[in-house]
Image 1 (tube, rainbow, N blue to C red):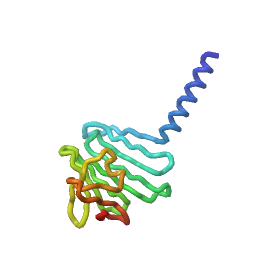
Image 2 (cartoon, rainbow, N blue to C red):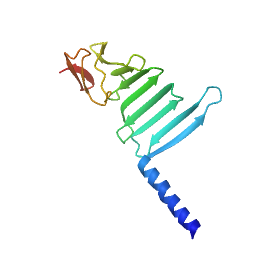
Image 3 (cartoon, helix red, strand yellow):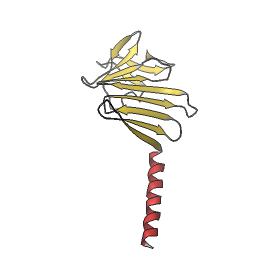
Length: 142
């Protein structure tokens, strides 16, 4: 009876963890580079991410039908976002200097560093005097 109870509890815990996590992950050990590559796929088809030992990563968010709606890339200290999946980098963050910037009018413009990162599609200029919004696939003055 004790074995059956343990088995049932284990099955319930594994099922609960799978439902909560809602992801499938794979770890690939590299032969010639230090560290592993972690690949994580969301069960509902809305995302895929790959990371190599904290040095580089790629994340793709999709609409559930496989169409990309957002990309993020990390290369060393730099993070880049394509906020609408069109292939253009719309925002960046330098982890070394802790300075975010948006791509507006063909140049990088530093904006205030906020806790929400670029999940918010509204930003203020570094000095706080101007407001910007990401809409229709680009940043614009509000």
